[in-house]
Length: 115
Length: 236
Image (cartoon, rainbow over all chains, first blue to last red; front, side, top):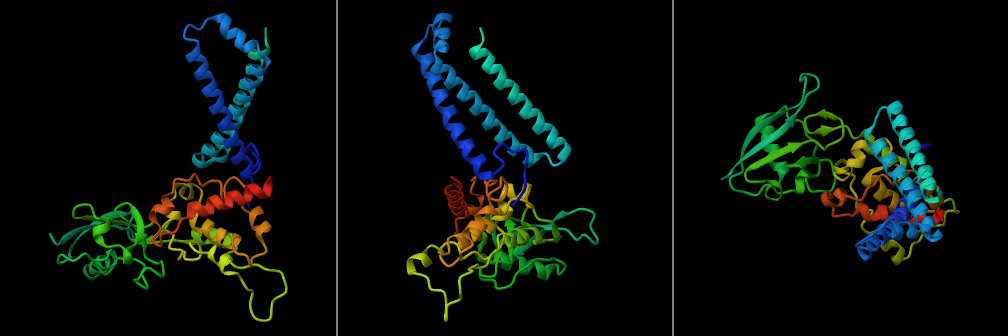
């Protein structure tokens, strides 16, 4: 057993599962957005804001945002443990990634539910 | 053309500052020799060349080297299988410390093998004669027990190159699954809990270099997938 404390799920199997579940959610969100753009070739502000006025769209978008955060945390954690061998640098990079993802999620909530 | 151009990685830490490639010419007389035969002919030219070999028939697994970029056993690899044109480049197995020339230090590889406890564990009372197994359960071990620990797979795996101290590697994981799949082994839960971290199993990214090089035609990637399934069903 190799001990780790900065990965998202604290265990390999949970990280693995979260990464796959978040990938499915992101794929669905991408397909939805691409389809929306295809069906609205002359997209204007009214159509765009009425889409995001719906509660389900806000929830779907927040879910996609959380999926990006989880997916990126796990993925970049793996990259950092593979390639950054100096532990103080690695911890610094991991902290920066986690803080940036936290900021993006809060910012996204503000965009979705803000005025 | 019966003259083979062979380029061999040379390094003697007692006399050399750095490794270098040495060129040899071997007259194969048009025969499709095994790479081990070629190395033996070079050894006759230069007796200081160091390499490992033993059974010379693909059973002992001691002569794994990197031939023209691909790991394999020299004794069962004909030169026609690995040579491009007339050139053969021989290097030690990648990722492990070089002891001398083609001989590598396998400690890290064995350490990972030891970690998965490669022996049957059963705390039930011993039967009078032997622990029986149905033919169906025995079939589950096919494709697993044949591993000869030549390290061709683990040393072709980038995840093992980057984290040989934490990632068990394809050879170790194939054996881990060999005991997880054994109906006579009762330590399944303990075995799984020692593998449930982000490195031991999950550093495998499924690129299948191990399957590509295995001289015994085994499939460690499939075994790793099965361990993952067992971990998942154990934890959900």
